[in-house]
Image (cartoon, rainbow, N blue to C red; front, side, top):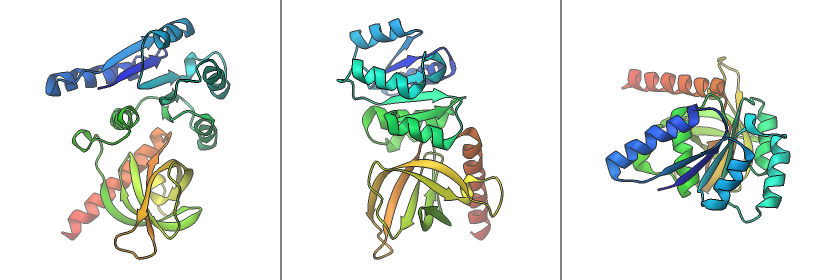
Length: 241
């Protein structure tokens, strides 16, 4: 169960949550709430009156640049520590990375991608993925990839990937991952911003590590490339069986 606050004008994200919350109430008796704020005054009133597990901010609703807005918010509400997710039309990974480094938990590129929005909502609301509510599914694979140092993609979905490497990646660290699965052109490696959620010793390769990276602010184009890569990997696995 979670309480969500949305500050913005676009109906798409609230509609996704509204339908999902109705389904969860019907299927499991789970009660979640969604509160909308259309201006700064309503936002302040909502935050003063309730406690929220996750806050979504539409970049178009802000009266100043996101990083400046967040700095002002943190000064006014230093006690608020729950995830604040920014939504908008930014597609430059470098600019999105600066926003994440400033303190936003994530960036959802509009229009919102329903499976990814719901997958990440569960993570930010509860702190972990719920295996019974997964919206995306992963495939095993072996593809060369780089996070500053070379390694291999061993598992991929639209939400995250598992990366085998000889170097540890600190939990919480932001990295840019390069691989063919993030590009529309064969033989060309695309890039996607990720955050490390786990690093453990690899069970099958002594002296190497399995690093779990979930994607931060992936654009619709990158999501399309990932889904195309998954379809190709699935077709290849079926052809070999």
